[in-house]
Image 1: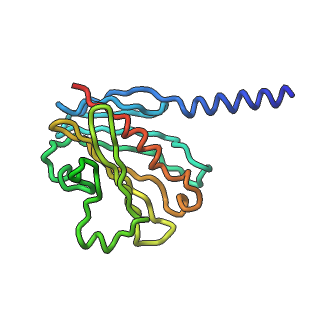
Image 2 (image 1 turned 30 degrees about the vertical axis):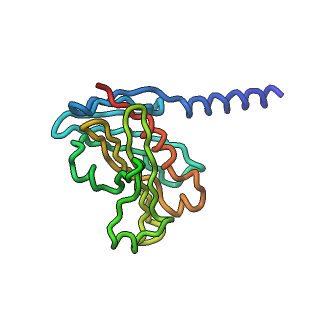
Image 3 (image 1 turned 180 degrees about the vertical axis):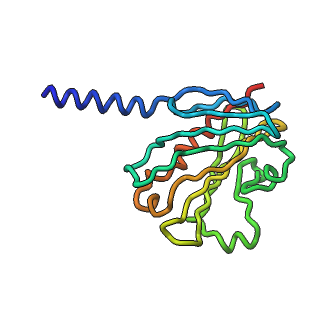
Length: 194
């Protein structure tokens, strides 16, 4: 009985530690100072050189099972003016109603299937944005990956970037191996600081 109680306490402690989050501030450039919720063990870095950039690195992101090779999750950011072409005509654009939709060329529309690409709203306390996951469709099946592209805008600035979400064979085997929901939780917590 004591062993069962000990194991229960150990499991609860591990779950709490895994779900422990903190606030971090990244001061990348004028207009791109943000506060973001990150896992307690995340490494946060930023620099003001060039246009300003930053990154969040989680060494052991949550997955359904231990993989033979586990890559850390790294969300990279770059500070851009809102008029930048990547912001205005990137993977997503705002429609008349104000929500985000995929921005695909006629060629892209014939190439991508709905199961290989998806857009997500990134509603934040004082900003709006999008994230788009794109699945590799060429190359060896075992090496195909899911990539997440994202852009969060506020007034005249935006923080944009991309990140690797996992290998498609692992994601198809178990949906918890897809880090997209985990990354979206982080992106949706971004708050621009004046």
